[in-house]
Image 1 (cartoon, helix red, strand yellow):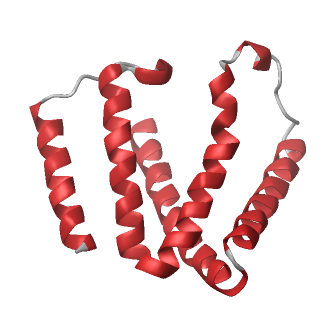
Image 2 (cartoon, one colour; image 1 turned 30 degrees about the vertical axis):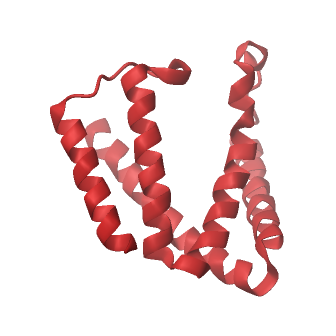
Image 3 (cartoon, helix red, strand yellow; image 1 turned 30 degrees about the horizontal axis):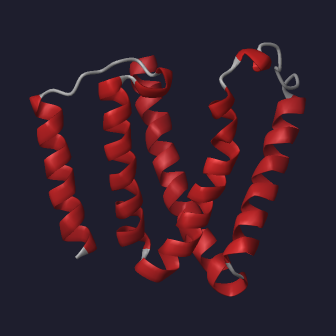
Amino acid sequence: MREFLHPLVALVGGLAITLQAHCMGIVDTALGTRTSVTFTYASGGLVALLLAFATGGLETKGAANLPWWVWTNGVLGLLIVGAIGFVVPRLGAGRGLTLILVSQFLLAAAIDHFGLLGAVHRPMDGSRIAGIFVMLAGAALVVR
């Protein structure tokens, strides 16, 4: 079941990113990046908090044992949401998200290859390197 569920969740997440980018672009254009990011995080945070309490609360045991840098995820999320909201109405969803996606792939490949930030080491091989070059060529065609 996981072989089917994990890719499905990833695909749904990708669709959500695209829809969010479009909606944030509209809000960004009408009200500005700061307002767009604020409303995005406030509404998402409220829903997450309500879901957490509706399904048993928040688990905090062991939080003190986590590395300090994992707590930067909220700030990173602000950067992501701000970049999406700013870029999409100015470059278009296809071009903007392509550039964002390329940077994600390149950093993800480095994290996997070197086992950075506690990730499982997944060494780069010829087919992955070829895939990165194909992706970069495709991105260049989309962005041009």
